[in-house]
Length: 288
Image (cartoon, rainbow, N blue to C red; front, side):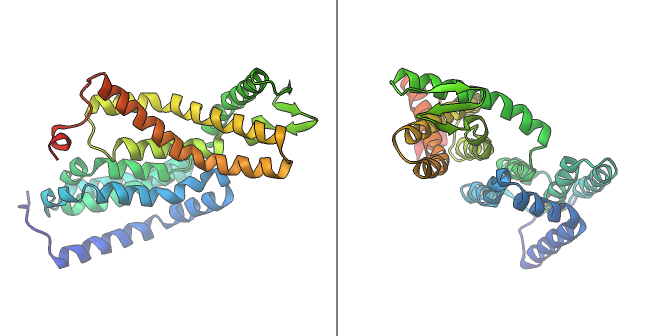
């Protein structure tokens, strides 16, 4: 095994060359990924994935001192696996396999020069890259169906509870003869994966204990549902007491406000766990 040593400028240039080679080797997959982002509005959240990965790497910058140059043949093996996965994706027309192969190619560049130690130190950064893979249509439809039904039922019940007369017809809600296609326009599909990325970034951006991270990840779907309910009810009020144009604008703005609301709710869960005197943060954070 090659002895570990400090990084030099020559090593950095070699790393850049490996990254460029990997991108060129899997260029069709990267082109297809860009096409998916431009073609589907639901994939817009992918644009912020590199920034999330960069942020997670930045807050872990102190760990770079423990990463030494240690060339490993395991990285070469991973490159071979990525190439095989890309071939399978092309032969079976499985886009997930093709995109995953491109990401594995990038990860392999780190392992070739630094070994698996880089994975131990920066695991959340590499996991964040998985959000680059567009969610297959089958999974989208499986998520959209329940969200549509829940959106219609909750919006109608809440509006009726506060005295706003409304009628529910399938995936439509009628308010003062105004038709709201809650199931299609407000099912949360455009933001659900952005919320998932937000949850991931929050959970791995603060030094939490493993148990606390598991609790927050398990609570994330319920937080997402709560955020979406708040958005839907606000949109329903806008349709009831304002113009259609304002209501549509309100719907778009409320969608982005779901992200800070989700962070506030997650922070509330952390504070509640601390109030219960549960071990939440690591000792390093408490001593800082």
